[in-house]
Structures are given as C-alpha cells and as structure tokens.
Length: 340
Picture 1 (tube, helix red, strand yellow):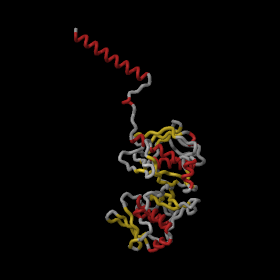
Picture 2 (cartoon, rainbow, N blue to C red; picture 1 turned 135 degrees about the horizontal axis):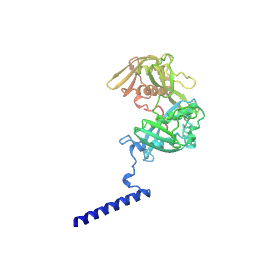
Picture 3 (tube, rainbow, N blue to C red; picture 1 turned 90 degrees about the horizontal axis):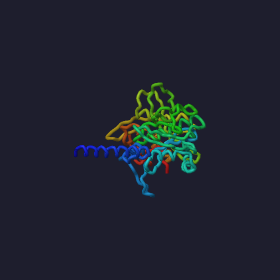
C-alpha cells in the first residue's frame, strides 16, 4: 500500500511539472537555457584575433579593410579602425553607408560609400561561415550596373575579411531574390571574387591571374592605390609575373598611374632566409628624385609581393646592391590604403 501511495505521488509531481512547462511555452516564455548566446559566429569576431586599444579613448579597435568606390568606378580598399563592439561585422557596414558623416570622412580621399543613404541593415547572423545579411529594398535601386555590382562585391570582400565569414547570403526585406535591377545575381551565397579585373595585352583564356596595385589621385590631391586583378599569358601565378605586370603599368592610364622610371626591368627575384629579394635595373634609382613617388611605388611593390603567402619580407635591390629608399620597406604599411 505504501509503495502505491509513493507511486501516485510521484506521478502527480511529474504531471504538474509537464503542465507547467506547457503553459510556459504557450505564454511565449522561454527557458533561459534555450536562448542562444552571442557567439563568435554571430558577431563576426574571433577569439584570439588581434585587438588594439585606441590611444585617445582606450577602447578596443580592429584594423578592418573596408571597400569603397572611386569616381572612375573602381573598388578601393581602405583600412579603417573599427571599435570592437559586439556584432562588429554588422557595425562595419555603417562606415560603408552614404551618410553625411561618411561623406565628410571620405571627401579628402575622393571615395564614395557603396551603400545608399537610405540603406538599412535589418538583420545579420552568421552560421556555418555564411553571413545572412538582410537589407531593406532601398539598396536595390542602384543607378547602374557598375554601382550595383560594386556594392555587392564590396560588401562581400569587406565581410569576408572577418575570420568567421566565407560567404554572404543577401536578403532584401527578409526575402531572397534571384537578381537585382541591373542583373547582379544574388540568389545564392556569394564568396569574394577578383577585384577590378582587366586583361593584359597578351592574356590568354586560361592565363594566370595576379593582383597589382596602381596609383590614383583624388581631386583633393590625395594619393591612393587601386588593386587590379590582371589576367596574364603565364601558366602560373608567380611573384615575377606580378612584378612584371606592375612594371608594365596600368591599361586605364586616364585614371591610374605608377611612377616607375621608364625602362625599369626586373632582373630577378629570389628568397633567402625568409626575405624575398627583388633585383631591378639601374633605372629604378631615378625614384630617389621624388620622395612621394618613391613611397607609392615601394608600397605597390610590397603589396604585389605580399599576395604570395611565402613572401614574409621584401628587400629591393638595384643591380644586385641594396636600394637605399627614403622609406624602408619594413616600415611601409601592410595595407594598400589607410584612413587617418
């Protein structure tokens, strides 16, 4: 009899707990253990990733490469120091939006934000290395195909700079669309693609691609570098090919330049004890006549070389001897452009 009473008491207790749980769910209440906490994937942050403190505010910041567009329609990467807040990847999109504040920040550089003034980020989450980015439909109203493609590509390139993001799935007012007004396909998750693509004079259909950097000057006389993905005639993407294409100069000479002295040649490239030596002909010495040109050319050389993972440090030689540049390559920024 005592066992029976104990059994009935236990059953009543279980039923009471079950009904209480059901009522809680009907009322929209969720147990705290069911609420997902903010993770690295949701915020775009990565544990252990380099953080830096601002000297003025003592806040944590992240050096983030953000893409903008110049007057000629080229995508331009700029390193900006973004406050390290929860959801920093989403916060980064704010500095890509055409607000009065960003217009003022970018005026000197002669660059334009990629997102229109009325753009809104309705939501963003990251799962399985794919960022689900929900924007309002105002962003669909781009003036032309170049602006439309640059906006999508620039967002993808910027967000994929975060270690937790490989691709971006675009949604507009919560819905996936096949393509935008000017034909840019956005139905499936999009990964980073080649930026500012052009063909070399002797390019082949299966030619290797290299990234080179050319100089442009804003109306306010601000110098910046534009990355160009050049399709070549080479079978393999090599350091020598990249440097040679840099020396060949830009095809769009109306909007880009590189002040490499005429007839400068690459005599060779070799790696020794972690340092890559680039040996140029004697013409390169003429760079010393212009310190500004020298600084931009050296940065372009360094950026072209550093695209290859095996290159850790770059040393420039002229006819086999050290080139005594005014700005040593070791102190040259590792970013193509920096916002100051």
